[in-house]
Image 1 (cartoon, rainbow, N blue to C red):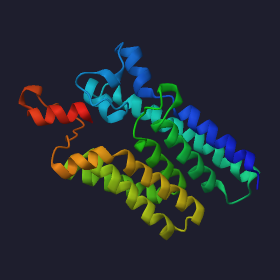
Image 2 (image 1 turned 90 degrees about the horizontal axis):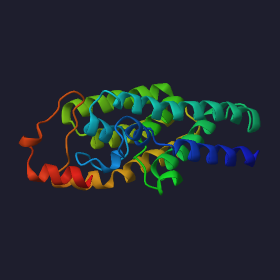
Image 3 (image 1 turned 45 degrees about the vertical axis):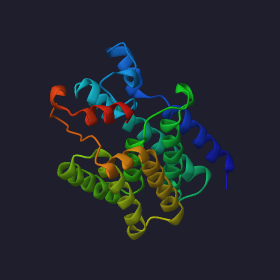
Image 4 (image 1 turned 135 degrees about the vertical axis):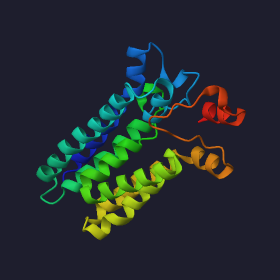
Length: 226
């Protein structure tokens, strides 16, 4: 087994995925850091970007985040078949995805403070097994429509994705690696879990803009500390 390809994949995924579209676009378009927007949560990800600036450019943040993961994982999935052996494509995807998540969450470019890496996680699941990815996405959509809690929907969908992978014939090591990805996603939402438990988690709407004047003090404080 070629250990070098594992190291190259890990470093490339970490460094490239660490470049954050939400931070870059907020600086270019709005001339501010999305993490410092007074109306936001401080998190440099799609959800907070949408909360601060609306959907006009938020879709581009999502697209760029997904594209980074797709390109990296496709390239290294292919390289793993060459340097590790036939049948190891999903291993390359899962390995690259895990380090892409680490780069997104703890980027060296931004003092190791990044997003929650959910988009990288679900993209990785789709590329490992599209059926598991589709199942996870449908589950996320249903939970989001019913509860409007993005954090809860994210956690449930990714854990469910990890559970169904082995039943779809996915090799054991990619399953283990994606289980690590799902666990990491859950860990990154630990503050959201605390707010869910206390009933203070802020709800997420794609197209509904809530009037700030109608928010309760608790909701405002929750948003600031997310």
